[in-house]
Image (cartoon, rainbow, N blue to C red; front, side, top):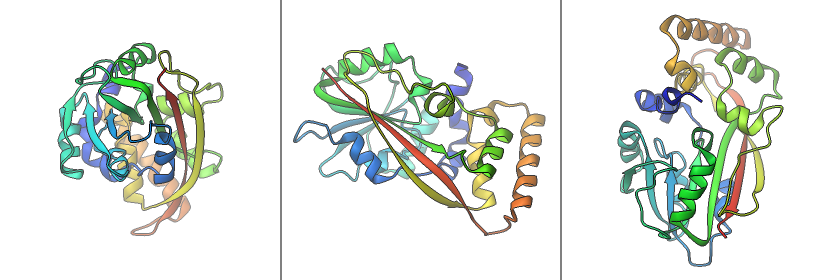
Length: 249
């Protein structure tokens, strides 16, 4: 998996914040509900611009910190979610002490990590009985125009891991136990401009040559023309939120 793609998002932080969807609160609540009673220390890893961080912060008494390898993304997070402590780091290299957390979450991020090394390192910082939660918003390609959109933009590592034809889901290793999973289906109304910003926040387009990026945008516009999507008009983009959780033994 390309390291350039994994660390490319900072240059498009504004498009990431504008174009990527939020996470359903119910899905995030389910991801964290197996935390021990009274637990509240949570690290959002690969936090990006804070899409997941801001939902976690809604939990009662939550003490949330954000961790990301990209300082540009952390700067965007501090603007979008003021008051959250931020640290540069990754799932494989956490900047926190042993057994100092009740939960670690990763939104749209586990497909960029080494699952074995990350499981060991997160097992170091999560106390016994704590939770590792993984969540992805994936476009629902059972809808024909959405499938065509993905063909134009190219699939992502996340889509292949979570929803690919041969996918077995994310790999989580010891000291975490059995992986539980749930999914939520919902729609997000989007304008043509928002769809373009979503596409421009994707690692494939960020790292593509200018000529290829221009061609992708041209094909997207042809699809939107066919759908009659103009100006401030919107179309419902269907999503499936896939959630996984595992308790540290």
